[in-house]
Length: 539
Ligand code: NA7
Image (cartoon, rainbow, N blue to C red; front, side):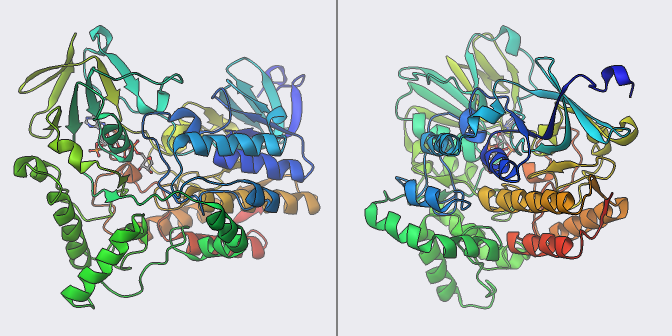
């Protein structure tokens, strides 16, 4: 790199953080606490990340508020009162705004600014960061907290440029909302997002047409309001709750059932499943029999239990059949729902299975499928994301010798512990590829583990008078092999999902997140640090 573009005159800080969502704010808080100079950049107009962008009708957190929060401040735990067990988007966003204000974080964040490139300058042992505003910063540590679901996917169909209906991607929702009353609406996608949109707008639109590619095993949510007694109990139990989230597979407060689904009688299993079902949470997934994700035989009765529940709620047997998932239960993210299946009993709602009746094009008035044209005022794209590695695709990250991170990851996203990639010294990632992602872990738990690990690591380097850390190439390959080995012990790789990259044409088929458990992940990360950052090279 020449001295002309090495940022010799640029502003210099100790740390640059990308992202001001859940993990980014936590990182900023910790880096400032270390006494480091920090600059955060955020593409959005304010804090919030996922909760800033995903403002679509019905957007709600599927993690319970008891563990979907920060535990780093006793004052915060005392002050904030969640109104419901599963908070709506507006409340999750209000919480993150409260945190930013409470801890004076905003002054360190530049909003409406994308980092477009980050180049490592080996001679100076610094990163040169460039933003879309043309600003250049030089930093020792570059930390990405850009999130796992930020790069929206749009169906690859011709005709969108000439189509008159208004297109709305769920993660780019207008801030003022949308008045759907009396409108003809098409929704593409029936993942966790599509389900929340569909059940929320079905009652107000003139007509709703849902384009479904893969049905989901959605679980009815139980979402009681919380009162003063609940808040006090939560405050009293906060330390125990936090500890518990580090001990469970999922980072939630639910333990997997150590029994096999096959070691109990049919009636015992049914009684247990009914009990879990009544909890109305993801405990029916990550608090279920421990082997349902490992064995098709163990999975089958649980999958059939859910299918029966769905069938009982849909009046038309042909529609019910379209809504039946045929892959193992839980091998894709299980959405929570509220009245979703009953929507298909409404006269104004049509379900199109695009496997039977493929979408061919956007037309001037709507969408053409093999069976004909469907006319709309609005087309909602609940079509998901180019997950995890896709979040990095818009930043030109170059490490030693100008090597591109995105090119390195094209075939296999190598990142030791999901935190650092060889050849990219002092670049840390929170919820990077092969870390436990939002897919298999309560985000604040696993994201928080990584934030704390990175903080401890930087503190360690500073105390030891070290300036650089990066993984040994062998260590990141060994980690990736372990991530694959664990995934291959489950039913997950054989099912199409964004966790495997199979929702994006041409993307490598590779598990994007560690599914060995939050508890095991923490144990490994702690062990690595305790053994003097085993597998990392420092200088
Ligand atoms: P998801 O879970 O990736 O869901 C996207 C949905 O859109 C899913 O039903 C897709 O079908 C469908 N999709 C995507 N592209 C197309 C095309 N071209 N044609 C038809 N259907 C399409 O994203 P969400 O936003 O719902 O949820 C993401 C995560 O947020 C979720 O897992 C939680 O962790 C929170 P597919 O299933 O790929 O066949």
